[in-house]
Length: 242
Image (spheres, rainbow, N blue to C red):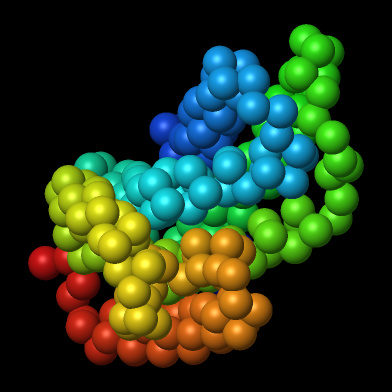
């Protein structure tokens, strides 16, 4: 039933703003870093070029993108007042909640893969313009995409629950902005373990291997706990959108 619901949801988001943002947000990061490289002519290696993209993506754009996509996916139902119609079907609120969460996860993984494609295209374009970046793009990039997707799960669950409950999309977006502002300061302190928004950056850019592993472990545990609590809460509420 969950996957049938996902197919229905996919039909609803065709040509939607959420789908457009999956390409637009990584594109903005890629264009920004391409402009920086062309202007500075630092002669980055491919590894540094990729690291610069992930730094901008994980510090600023990625958390905001998660807030935006979850807000848009749930906002369609709020805007069109279709929650009650959906819940009159032979499905439970929990099933719909999980289906939308999985759909948002697909959008997030898709955006990360789009970023990889755009970084590769930027590197190729720079080479054609005479800005050769030494090094090669290997499969370690896909490993980082996996880490970024996994460590973003706690953020995804929080933002999904907020946008599920609150009709105004401004609230989840405001939460995303405020939480993103804390990444830089808290991420450089010992308290980063208590702040899920820092897990993404720590998992790929921390100098300590132990910290990188801990970030992934914490992300999975926190996301699992939040998912369990929020799903049980959704199922016990009765009339979800009175």
